[in-house]
Length: 343
Image (cartoon, rainbow, N blue to C red; front, side, top):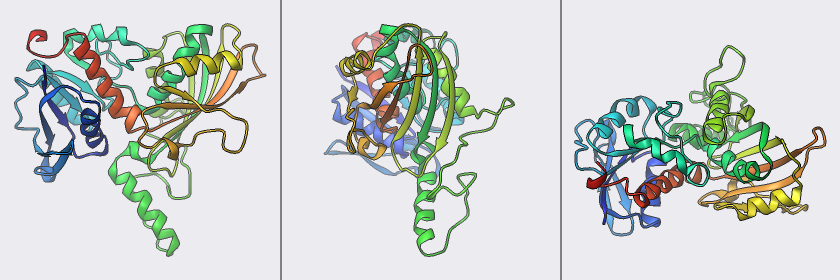
């Protein structure tokens, strides 16, 4: 049995990746609709090798009869249209962050907390976490299962693709402009992005943290364990695709580097590449187009009784967004939560 699927925000980087991932993983689709607004109406997007979709108007689209909607527009657009889709009987998987912290909307990484999906039955909305949170909890979960994570100190190195196409364009134009002494203005970022790093993502809060850092902590606790303490520094780096994270973890129980490496290696969706030589780790550029979350540089933290440090990277458009959403859709399918009988 196949489903009628709508992809909202289909022309963006994540929207295109959603359509590509649905095709690559053979999700049971009978028909698929690409939705957008304004000047992007009529844009052509390939679904598989033979089907070309033309974007239709989100404002005019009737979600009645649509089984699944994957939302990747802006949060403001999702706030209006995701509940409209759910009210029409459609199951919504939202990637925008609009519903991340709402109690009755599960925040889901299928490998980590699949049991949370049961809470989606009432509102018919499931949220996928921020890309930096997806890869972090994927790395923490197998360690938490054997030694209980107590505290996490994480510094993220986030690519510009998470800020959208305009941000990627600005990095490209600034990089090119520096070579010809024509550096343009910074419109998408607070400071020059090319050949620089910016320790500022989203708005500052009263305690000095940015909203991105606050969200990382709150989302991690919602997905993994509400008792885990998290402090984060989120940094934008001049990389087009791929997030990195330097993670220091304090555990309640003893855990060795070997135990951690084995647990991570055995966890679905994780790859450990950890050799203590010049090529023995993975960088963000090497994860582009890859489904896995990679962990390298696992080592003991000598400043606490039970501590480890490691490096973690993933493609933020893939596992950090589109793949995680499609895996949620697959789980909904497996549990009979899609289609006419589930309405």
